[in-house]
Length: 90
Image (cartoon, rainbow, N blue to C red; front, top):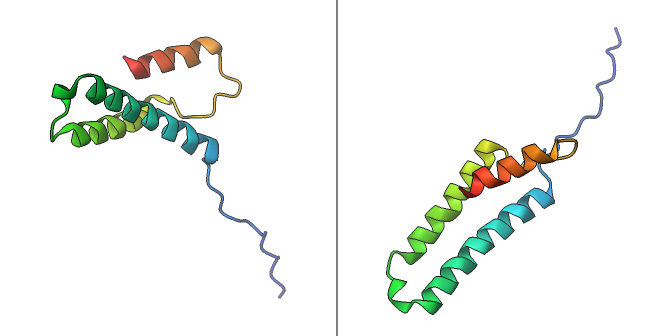
């Protein structure tokens, strides 16, 4: 018996480079903020500054993923997008 041909299905990532770019820019904004703080207020620079920055970046990305900040916003109401973005930064 002949078996039916298997469809040629390739595995594709559901997240594309724009999603990674947005996360990178959010992380860069946090790093820039810490840099400005330590430049303008040198006494704020301590041994834990790098650790605080890394924790802030990881926390922001995890919370952003949890509340849906980094999802595809095509076809979503503007109010929902704004509410989610504000919730992320509170």
